[in-house]
Image (cartoon, rainbow, N blue to C red; front, side, top):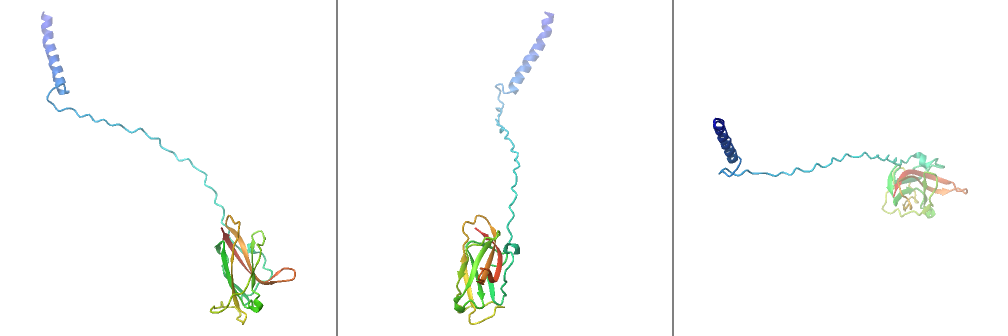
Amino acid sequence: MAGSRSLWPLMALLAAVAVFLGLACNGGGDTEPTIVITFASPTPTPILTPTPTATPTPTPTPTPGPEVCGVNPDPAPASVLQVQEPQPGQRVKTPFHVRGWGSEIGFEDRGVVVALVDAQGNPLPPLDVPPQPRASRVAPPGLNITEFTRPFGVDILVSGLETAAPYCLWVFLETTEEGVAKQVVQVPLIVTP
């Protein structure tokens, strides 16, 4: 019994600690209830790594130049024929307007011929453009003014055009018996759909 006496205080001490721990851990005492916060952590979303895509090589923008027009068979002096619109190197959308003046195009209503030639040298059908009335219009500087000086103007439609392309505008007064244009003004330009 001497051995059980020494165990008794130890057992009492263990029982007291168990009761104390039970009360401290919300074991039914008057302490405030423990607040439990449930936090659902988001599932990790996969990080998208961009896949490199091939950058398309830009197509070169056509630029008109004297080479698109080729050799002018018979250049018209500015005193005889002037094209005011479009300007050389201009980018125009089809249909586009062509206008200018001729010092003698009103004689017998001759007018001018307007043609468009592509970069391969293929002409579109030429247009005979009659002179317009001169009333209330001012001729450009450098043009010889005669009683037959008149303006001209026409709209040009390029059908079937899918992308911008260089063209050469030809405006001329007449042709030889062989069909060679005479008194020619050439205007390189870009025509867009």
